[in-house]
Amino acid sequence: MGDLFALKDVLFPDAVGMVLDRLAETNGVVVAEARSVVPELTCPDCATVSRRVHSRYGRRLAEYPVGGRRVVVRLEVRRFFCEALECGRRTFVEQVEGLTMRYARAGPGVKALWRSVALVAGGRPGMRLCRSLAVPTGRARLLGQLHAPDVPARSPRVLGVDDFAFRRSRTYGTILVDVETSTPIDLLADRTSETLAAWLTAHPGAEIVCRDRDSGYSRAIKEAAPDATEVADRWHMLQNLSAAVEKTCHQHRSCLHKYALDDVDAPA
Image 1 (cartoon, rainbow, N blue to C red):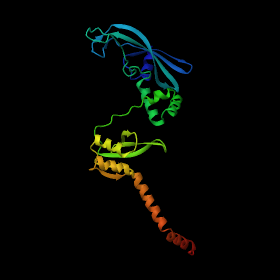
Image 2: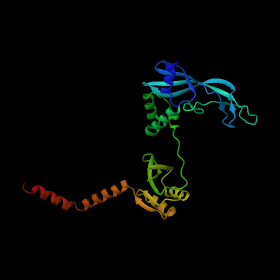
Image 3: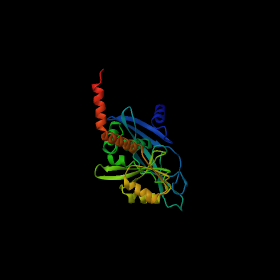
Image 4: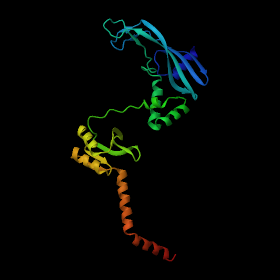
């Protein structure tokens, strides 16, 4: 029993009020059987304390792998009565702090890992990577970990505007970035000046707009944020510089060719 207590603290350090009853390996999968021992819980609706158990049932949760092996938690949870007559909720299910969430089939650590994989690798490649990491999941569930952040009510002081490809050479959108924090803040469905102008009108506050050379973006900024200063981003500045150098060299190639021949003919 003492060994199980020690293993519980190693395998599930954030789980509060949980007892590990059994640990076994079956077909390369580590199965942890556990239960909650919290004596009382509060109703999530009315906060009334309850000790009266309605029933018990099992949950199956994915957890961090151990030694390259997949880990599954078989957790016995209880459903409690809410005895407050004025509360509309008659029963509620306990959640183990640091281990379970409503309707989740994985612990918070695994869900965070899935989200990181989805951000880096996407759907199908991420699914294959998760399989090799011993935390298998499906493509839809993996992509389901990604949630769009809240769009701020005001534009950042320095706003970055650029296009990106939903499907290269076919469908393009616009990405908006807070340049000072390097944080994407919104995605627009296309790269037209009307769409960007509507966004700038609804989200005022941009003092500097860093954009590419698209004239449509320039029209939108002049229309919806006329007081903002327009600057070229670093990549397009370097592109402009390289184009200017190439054009200059092309215009004077006869001179450059002459000096190159003089260097070849000069005595050693």
